[in-house]
Image (cartoon, rainbow, N blue to C red):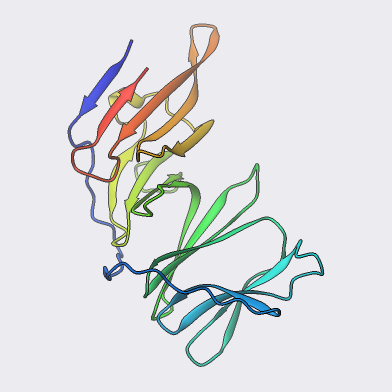
Amino acid sequence: MLKIIKGCLFALTFFGSYPAFAQADAAVEVDPEYEVLGRAGKLKIQKESCTQHGSSCDYVLYDAKGKKQVLMENWSKTANVYQFNPNLMGFLLGLTGSEYNLTVINDKNQQKDYSSFLAMNGQQSCFVTFESNLKNMPNSLVFYSIPDFRVRLVLNNKVPQFKKLNYPATANFEDNGDFSFNYNIKIGNEMGVQDVIIQNPCQSDYRIIMS
């Protein structure tokens, strides 16, 4: 049985949003000694000091004056840089079986971490985290829009349809922008799976389909 939910469960203004800038692609520089992965104004993130076969590298943030901040040293797991616009980038760090963390950095070197990162859509306009430290809203799926980083949707067990919500077993954005996830639920004495699709999750006309 399918359940379709429309409307506005939560539309919250994020407590510290970055200004929106015009979208643009950033050039990628390649050098035998290092690779520039992304920029925010005059700041840049470089991958450098890699081992001979590139199995592990350092990830370093340089400010406008060349001062360096090592984001991760001798790292061989997931490390991605998202170029949101010329003045804003994101650095994603994590490893399989553990939580991922997204650090957003603007051209003024203001940084904000989004822990328990789950997924981002292909257009880089929406991402979702699973947060357990929100005041009065524990264990919540939180959807943020990019590049303003406003909270667009929050789902937790205070929402009637999600009384049994827990950490997703799977979570990903489809090519069409839908966000699909599932989580384990107890049905009587047995365990089951609740499948959910959220259409347009970072827009006011989102729709939730449960099966």
